[in-house]
Length: 191
Image (cartoon, rainbow, N blue to C red):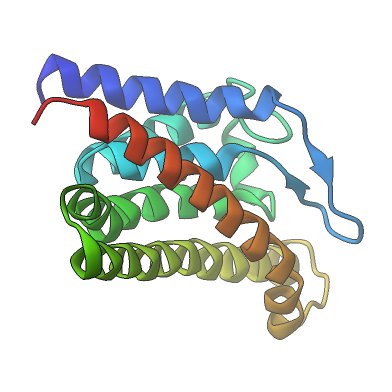
């Protein structure tokens, strides 16, 4: 990996980590909060090639697991037993898939005009939706397993899935913002 790519991976890992310090909004009835982490996950996928987007989020995960307080409630290896750790795993998958499925379409939409631009934007939106849903599937299954197997609480998988609907909507808005910013930056980059 070239030094420029290493630097970009480190930058997006740091941005995801620092986003925990930005304002958080508790979501009533859930142990989760509205944060800007997914915004930076999406942005890493839009700005980096797939493997670099994946590495950036794996570095973020590693920083938290070694004990740095970069996760919502701190850090450390025991964090894998938190119900929300599935999101952190999902971040890596989401960044990878966003880059793989969406990045090229965003770049294509910048170069195209008219109908071709609209088609590229539609494909980018579909790729973003797949990336977002992959993150949520991982997070919901992980949360379900932790609640039932580790915490001994009976939780229905469909109830968890339905309760995530608000988050999917909020994350969709964050993705649109990340796409606008990512497209503006990509438009100004050479090549």
